[in-house]
Length: 123
Image (cartoon, rainbow, N blue to C red; front, side, top):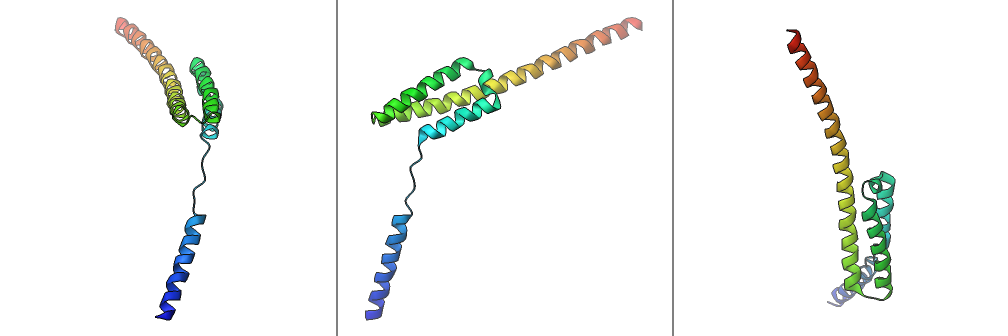
């Protein structure tokens, strides 16, 4: 019985020590957002929506001031808005790419119709 008591105490001690060390580190949301913005610049999404990027950068500044003033709700709302705006910028870029592809396909289609009309006239 005496050994069992020491074994339980030893086991609980180690489990408490390992649980204390397993705390998660806080992630700075501003750094995450800055990385997303940098990625948008690298991938060329900014050219598709320059006005939105200006608004995003202003929101980042507001988020920094809200974080410094310890206004968590405003800070969290701004971070979510920034992430959504970045998704919108990405989708706008994708729409522009697809629109260019559509224009090319429409031109090819028009050229094919012209050729078909010419061949029909020849018959």
